[in-house]
Structure formats: structure tokens, C-alpha cells
Amino acid sequence: MIFGKERQKARRYAGAVPSPDRSRRHHPDFNAKETRGWKAVEAEGRLSVDGWRREEKWALDMGLPGADVLTDKSIPTFARGELPHFAGINTFLKAPYVENVRDVGKYDAAVLGIPFDSGTTYRPGTRFGPQGIRRISALYTPYNYELGVDLREQMTLCDAGDVFTIPANLEKSFDQITRGVSHVFSSGALPIMLGGDHSIGFPCVRGIADCTSKRIGIIHFDRHIDIQEKDLDERMHTTPWYWATNMPNVSATNLVQLGIGGWQVPRPGVQVARERNTNVLTIDDIEEMGLEKTAEVALELAWKDADAVYISFDVDSIDCGFVPGTGWPEPGGFLPREALKILGLVCAEGICGLEVVEVSPPYDTSDITALFGARVVVEALGSLVAHGKMGSHKHLIDKPVSF
Ligand SMILES: [Mn+2]
Image (cartoon, rainbow, N blue to C red):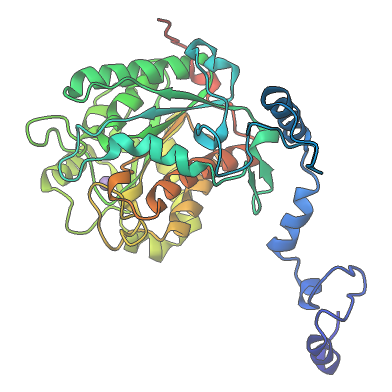
């Protein structure tokens, strides 16, 4: 440690003054406190590169070796795998497309699109959500710096494609969605759903709840309460939790609703939340409590006498300045980094499924809403991997379905 005048002097020559023990430090303050930034640099060195090398080898095999003039001999003639980010046929994160959906259980997690917007009560367009999220997910590498995880090295992910929804019929679509989610969940792969409007919350949770006798809690990020019985005479995107919490193993007292508030919360939904005793935290509650405490409280309530937790992430929980491409934009929600922080913390305990809903590419600007949707998925996967919880849902499957 250096103090007083010596420290001042060292500061002036920061960058030129090697630290006593760690010569790569750029600033003497790094010696006093190990920064997360540096810890992450070190953590990368402990990650395997085997999956990456395997992918390069596969790419050369599938895409033919590149032209002789190239010095990088890992580049194929036809783009295969991660690179270049602007090329290729997009699945989510360029994960393998599982054409035969019976093979989905060979993977730790499976992304499935639910292109459905017939439950919208204002702006439509979320039927293009899965395509929008997949396309912009090509920006991402499978590696996260702060977490020190590499999904390609530490888990297997596939893209099962989209559920065949029926645009003119909510009920037929719900049954199709439940069947698709049940199939994936029963296979052992963790189901990750790309919506779609929020009406899919009910059939998605039902798809999991049908395959288990265990009890499921829900952590719900939203500006809207989404628990009225009907809207416009149908089970629209304002209603999923009314129907989900009617199921015997999905209790409303394990429903934790984060970020609810503003001028778009229908009173019929508030009445049901009160009757059923759900757990609602506003943005002000969360700000006062802090992000860590919020996650702690959410976990405590969602897991109380429950065996698993499902995450439902509505992108409109974020301040509408960050998510223009959504069905019911509302100012005053989360900052993106706040919601991502809470999401990572709650996923650290393990989840039985995740949905990201209400991404509407036709209303989006520069793909930023779709990008945030993709980020929600990778953030959840990263947290599961970092905390050793990938696969923790498998013990729940005691009533698997087969079609
Ligand atoms: Mn919403």
C-alpha cells in the first residue's frame, strides 16, 4: 500500500508506475481493491475453448475450407456457426436448429418461438417477436464478461423453431402452445419461450404445470397486473395469471409481480390480485428496497411452499424509452440494467421455464426492443450456468407427456 504524497505521485504517473506485485495494473488504485473488471479478465482464462474449437472444425467440414489467400484457416467458404455475426440463417444465438423436435431432449435448454398476437388489446405485431429476437440475437457471442460464463462451453442450447399457432383462435392456439411447451419440458430440456403477446403466459405455464405434481411459483416482470378474468370478452394478454393461478399447483400467493404501476393497470385485474392475494411491488418499492433486497423478497415469496419458479418477463416492464417496440408502452418502468440485475439474481436459484413476451418488431426502432428480449434470455441462461442451476428443473418431471 502507498499513502499520502507517494500515492499522489503514483496517481500522477498512473500507467507508467508498475504496481509492486501485479505489473499489469494500469492504476495504483487497482492494488487496493480488486475490481470486478479485472476479476472478469482473469475468469476468462479459466474457461474452456473446446466447444469453440469444435464449432470451427464443424464449420470447415460443413462449409468447405476457405480460399487459399486467407491466413485464418478456421474460416470456411460458406458461413457456418457464430461468425460472421451479420451472416447466416438465424436461430436464437445461432444455436442448432432441431428439425426433428423429438430430439429436443438432447439439449440442456431449448428456445421455442410463440408467434402469436391475437391476445393483444392495443398494438399487435408480437407475432413477429420470435423472428425479431432471433435475428438480433446474432449480435451476441455465447460469452458474458462479468459473469465469466461461456454458454457454448458450459451448456447445450438448441432452437426448436416455432409453435404452429392459429391466428384467428385463442383457444386453439393455447392448446397448441401448451402441447409444445409440455413436449419440451417433458423431454428434460429447459423451455425458453419467445413471445408473442402476454396471453401466452397461461398456456406456457400450463404446459409445465401439466407435467408435474410439484408446485410452481411465478416471478412476473411487468407494468401491468395481467390477472383479470377476461378482457374484450376473451382470454386476452391482460388475463394470463387469472387462468394460470386457477391450476391446482400454481398458487396466486406464489405470484410475485415486479414493476406494476402507472396509468394502464386495469381495475378488474387489481380486484383479482387483491382477492387472490398476489405479491405486488411497484418501481418505488423496488427503488426504496434496493435491487438485491427486491430479488431476495421475490425469491422468498415465489418459493414459499413451492418447488420451482417460472419467470415471465414482459419487456414493457422497462421504461418505454428503451422499448418502443411493444404492445402497451408505459413510462416510468425499470431501467434495463435494474431489471437485468434482478433477473440474474432470481435465476440464480434455478427456474423451470422462462418466457419473454410483448416484443413487437413492427413498432421497434433499431431493433432495440428485440435486442433487450434476447438479452433477457442470455442473462437468465448465464445466471443458471454461473450458479450451477442448469438442469435443476429435471426433478420436477414426474408426469411427462408423450405425443
Ligand atoms: Mn405488460
